Length: 274
Image (cartoon, rainbow, N blue to C red):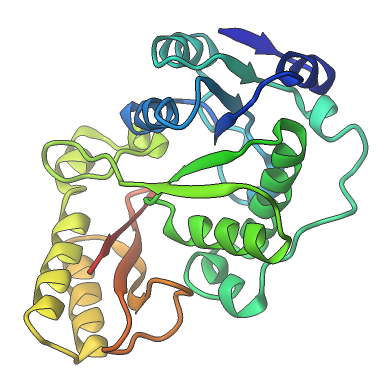
């Protein structure tokens, strides 16, 4: 695996590549990231990944400074997964001057759920992903479904800006007890880690109820929030929405149930398509 610290180096290495599959990351990799790389290999022999902790998508009171940086271990995992090129710029390389041009997602899709809880987050995500797409120029890009709203924002950005990139959403990788793998799971204490699968169980119960014919979506959401609070969580939301745009659910559209909640000091998100 070749490691590139500069845009110029990466572009030179990819100049003659016929087809590129790209899976960007912020590092601190786990089996979910590795799965993305392995799936990328089914789409191209030239698999590119990136490691960059993007300051633009972190709020002022979020964990940018303490976000785990595990570069050497990450490189070993990426190399073993068949990644050909790793782009690992520092901030000065990716943002040589203060960023003044941004990609702002549609207000209706940016102001809900994660966007409501983390104002400006998706503007930061869309901006850095668009910049990475411009640098790498992939034919295929892969993202995990765990960050469901992020995947929606990126898909819509690519479609509306006519970027010639196929976006592939990859299934969430889970621990044996159902907890969605996340770089932030490492923040959990042993007791919190034992409690954490409750979030997935609540989503699974809602999905089962909807599949069985229940359409009182608001009641299901309220009951799940109450259950989590009683168990010591601090929920931000539990929401049943349309898959395509995360707007209000209706019985005619494919649905997804999403949740975000704090367990101790750790904020966990998860979702299940219905």
